Image 1 (cartoon, one colour):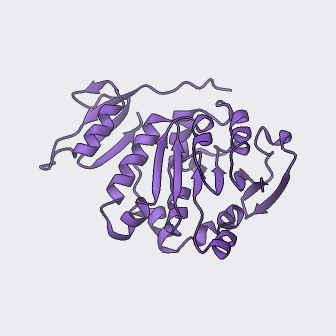
Image 2: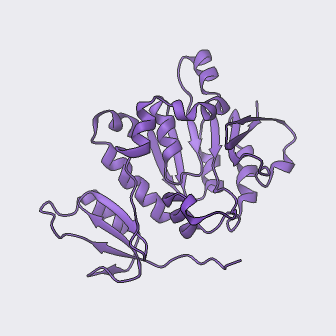
Length: 267
């Protein structure tokens, strides 16, 4: 197995062909990361670029990642009013909570990633707190939420999301919510490179393959919090998340074609 090491990332301010310059919010995010600043784009390097209002991370092969909640899959899932996350919504108990209390519950997404599930959940009308531990991924999310905030319906969704940076194990005990959602990276499996989505390729490069971080602490930390349930997203047929063997309470499962949601009921 190839030994993983985190990529070295440099920063670049792209002011060319942009009469408006770099937005103050974008510039502040870039400065907060304290990355080495380059005067020109270096060859064969990981580069976080600020251009106008947008932050983008570019790999040495030139492939770029930016998060945009106003376009693509995120916009489609919001427009479809959660149709793509019906199984997740059931696992989190959203409709049952709304029938009982007349509103959607607050959900804590403890493994933010690229924010797609959090955005889809917030598009249903509930509040979502997102925790992301990697500073670059957190900055990309913060930038995407800031840009979305100025766009009508997307702005309403963005304002229902609170983004936090840090380790979930340390932040979870300080948060209140109805449910905690965990979506750790899926276990590595042999597959063709073309089958791996671009966003997941970036996350694997930044965070390491699944298992290089201590997921064994994440589920027990979540299960100790004062929430109604903890929901863990897993590939269909995969083992439960490490730490599940310590649970003595009720656990149920909901499945979709390629995904299983393990639901740990606390009350």
